Image (cartoon, rainbow, N blue to C red):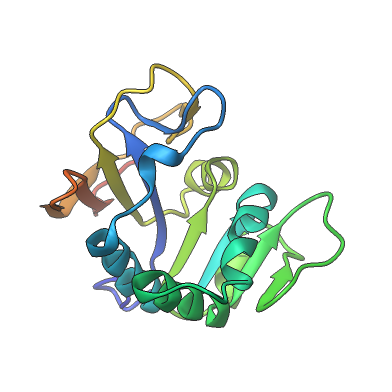
Length: 189
């Protein structure tokens, strides 16, 4: 699924607490584990991607899915989708990556230009550089009913406003609310 202009979308999608954190003060993310219904929605979204950009930390966390062999249901389906998805890893320390992944050889804009289809950018640090460079077209936020009081923020501090338009919203039985926004066509950012 590409943008209305026919161009690819760069998508930043994360689970967040009500107060805007993707991980708690000690890095905990247990509060954001999806139930079966939400997992199936994530699977649908991941299936539509042409590739995913990962920072080193997210890439290492997602290796769990590369080695998924005893999962069932939505988790087994996600593992299969994730293993087939091309991934581009941005890292200053890794010298090799596993599975259907390669290390980035260019900057964010150069790597986006090399790919076809919609692409996801994951990890708050990497996403911040994409956002600051004006490369993120859509923000997909999964708000969990929890307040963490601190931790890793979803969005970086910016020196300019980014105007958005809401595209979709829905809530699951788990009380997680999905908010999908895209850059407004008149956005100054």
